[in-house]
Length: 467
Image 1 (cartoon, one colour):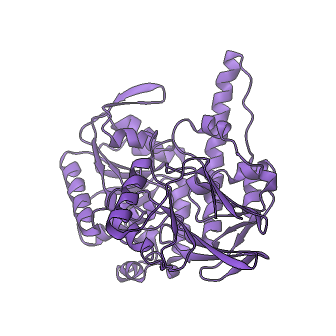
Image 2: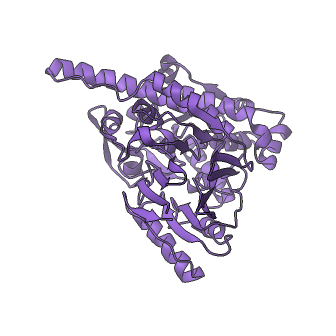
Image 3: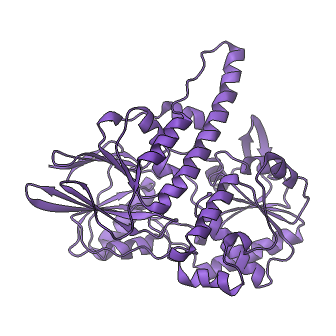
């Protein structure tokens, strides 16, 4: 009998990690994500695996976001040596994301150790190294969409386009036990159908067990037309106040989407004289990767680029400037007004966006626009929830900048889209809801039952089910 244990993203959004075990196939880990929020060094130092990494036979990765992949280097450091199955585009993004994550971790660890030396405390030892990051990439085995791969004698794997970010996949597994096939479908993160550049999530119809995300299980997003009108209005209002706009953005997915829509506004004559800054070396590199994969993206959006005489997101906005170096980033803070600053991290847990907050969050002429989900415990969530004062760099700052949330830019399916996707399965499979805060999953579960007669389960952290 196969079992699944929910080690992460169970009644929470970050840290996706699920262990599939069976005598027939061994131990297969679905995702190996990092929990987000709080101090990065403390978080990584405290993260422990509730299983032996040496005994994991393979990892299956739905996509590259760090809340799904960020602990792979630590897993390798502790002895995992098996294959990591992912899409080709995910492997390309994974190198960028994990190298950047390690660079931030290494820098913050060095800073903490300098302080510990002065206090006479024992130095913290790094949980993984750059060599471990390289091992992760070397262990990746890319698989194309819609092409079945034999993971083991008794386990077949197929990836389908999830429409979330470049390379994101719905995972379909067929496990053979005692001569019978069992089909497990894991949604990964399902995309928002209004997302720019991404295709709609693939439709699947057969499963014995369905594990579906519910990040936005309790609400729907505004449609894209209304969202773009709201964005345009926010930009006009901030321009009239003589301010600047700060957009915390994930380097993969959200950044490319907001660049696309700002480019559309520019070519419609609605971007005024804004100077647009992409202040993230990682996001710049990821955008270059996106340019290489435009041929597999949503045709109508790629056609918009072509019609504007551009074949690249990087060239779509003539006023776009890249800030690679720390000096270039600092120079942005000398601009008094008229700057749109896109920088990481998306949940404001670190990165350059916090430096821009330090210089501008206390002035009411400025605006912060959130375009992605903000998890509990993050600075972004505090701001979205209306905090009047926040602490950064050991100092307290008044929050006087306007705080706006544009949910239409979300990379996740809303409640209605999740339900429509789940209803494609016939007969109805056993449904497990994951990757959502408890309130969101409970709302989704109730809606499925009351409106469609579909029962679902919401496992707790560490819970194990038989499959």
